[in-house]
Length: 421
Image (cartoon, rainbow, N blue to C red; front, side):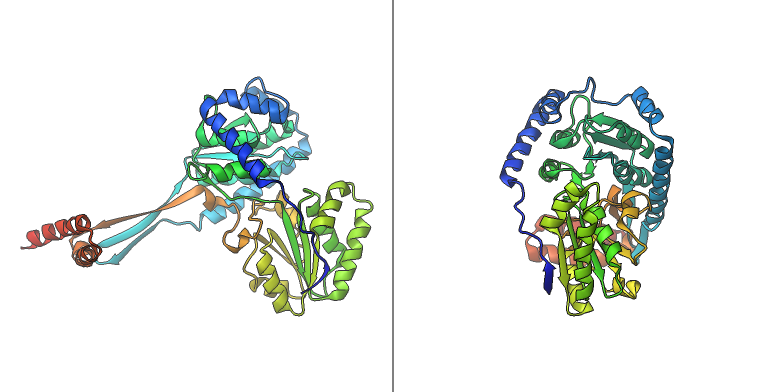
């Protein structure tokens, strides 16, 4: 692999300092509840809302103040995400099977009762954020969805949470919001699973509360990689890389190609487009520090390197993109062909934009309607089933030295044999 541009070895934030701060916040919220939320809202957000929960009147006001076209576009995105989530849910079916005569096994698909959706404030009012975390939960049948967003978040975000179906909305952000949803306070109920991306403190808080509650994943800075051969369009590829780079200065962007000519052209095109990009103050440092252009000797080498990186967003710009796509294994979400832009998924096409980063695409997919349900097994037996499984269960228990287990298995076998006799 030849690098035309290699990313710098960036120094991340002091993980120990973040861990210690978050641990302190979690403990305080667990012990002091709303009082701790007020302290940390003042310290980290510079303001303490009069009341944490957004009232019905405030929801209505946020909705009334939402630009009509923005509302129409938000509702379009909600419908697309809802429709895809419904189609996905239809593939998750309950199961009943008679594995052996008299041995009945199965599973049920059960919605998680209460979900906590963290909605980041961020640099811009990202109305797509609540759509991606709240809408699939409602489709899954979760009884209650709690949304938390920073008190400094744009009022349009309240409207976005409302339109997406949040049952309750709270003005609490950061690690303190994760603590409140994990442990509960006088105002905010404890949830069973927390979803949604956030900054390093939110991420660390999710890591520390995992176990007490479920979480979706640990998200790092956003990522986009493009796989391309000589048919790739340098201007389009550069545009897509910079579109993602404007998220954050830590965004990871890259091109893996079999064409040195394309690599050089994309490098030049990125610099050209940065010259008049309004968000260059963010996208420029992201490209400078985290941008990568690698030239592979063959398509096989390109695919192998891509599977090592396991990018959050992976675009395929090759002569036969569908054939290339079938050879890929590790990614968050795949964008096949030059007309499939990450921005469509980020905003409104229907697939979820909450995706694995930092190589997690090697072992997991992104947030989806299945993230909001439990597949829980069950079994029941009649006499024939007991006669089939009890003898090996007794023998296994005896060989393991677990006499209580053996007796529980034998009790039912003896009942059946006694009845038969």
